[in-house]
Structures are given as structure tokens and as C-alpha cells.
Image 1: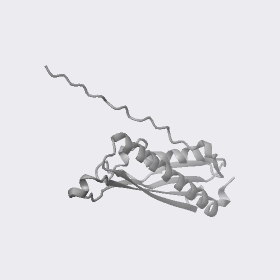
Image 2: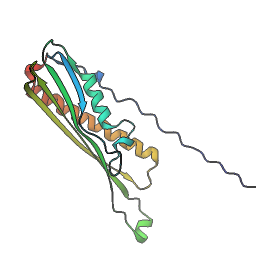
Image 3: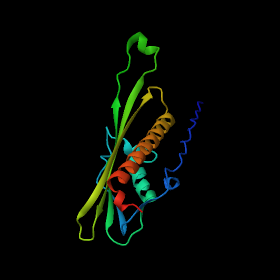
Image 4: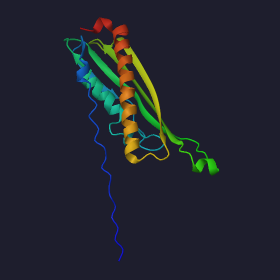
Length: 180
């Protein structure tokens, strides 16, 4: 009689990506609308939908946590333009050398882009600030599912740090008159 058992490796638990600790960005507007014009394809080569927290969700959370309406007129619209992560297979060493080396097998290229635009009550645009962040990471051919998930989480954290810095800078620079 043969018996086998398979141990399942628990998935790592990642913390929620939240941004309240960064403090609010107070906008002198009556309301803030958060929308995403980016529609993930949900198929290869895109993999953002497989992330513990997809980058688009993290960026939407950033806007919800940080952009606060403190006025009574006008409105702000935060639009997520891109939140993609594309997987690219990398060339691996073959032959005898390949048998004794561990190559990087995939590269993940992530992009986040968003625009914050202010409109007056008649719908006329009064100004906007745009930000874009790019990051990449590679994983080894012997990476486990959990290793890959950790790489994706770390990539997303770094990407969010980058876009946060760009958004803060550009909002201050281009929408300074709308800040409280």
C-alpha cells in the first residue's frame, strides 16, 4: 500500500497598504471623486490582478486615505490612468553552465499613473497635477509561489512610495492654490 501526503505551504499574510499615516492632503473643494479609467486585461502578460493588493487598488486607497475635501464649492477628480504590471520571461542559461546556475526567470514591470484635476461648479477645469511611477523586479527561476508574492508586495510598496512622492510634489506645485 502506498500512501502519500502533501504539505501545503501557507500563503504569506501581507499587511494592508494604507496611507492615513501620511496625513491628509486637504483640498479646498466640496467633493473628491475617485475613478479608474484603467481596466486590467486579467490575462497574460499582465499579472497585476494576481498581486496580494493590485496596484490600482492601492492607488485608489491612497486617494481615499489622503485626498480630503475641506471646501464647499468645486470638485476634485482623481483618475487612475495606468496600474499595470507586465511579466516578461527572461533568457536562461542552457547547457552545462545552466545546470549549475540560478538565473532570473521573469521580470515584472509596473507602472502607476494618475491625474488629480479640479473643476469649478460649472464643470470648467481649473488645474491638474499628474504623476507617474515605474518600477521593475526580477525573480529567480527557483522562486516559490510565496517568494513571488513577496516580490510583488515589495514592488507594490516601492511603487506606491514613488507615486506618493510624485503626487505630493506635483499637487503642491500645480494645485497649490487649492490646498488648505
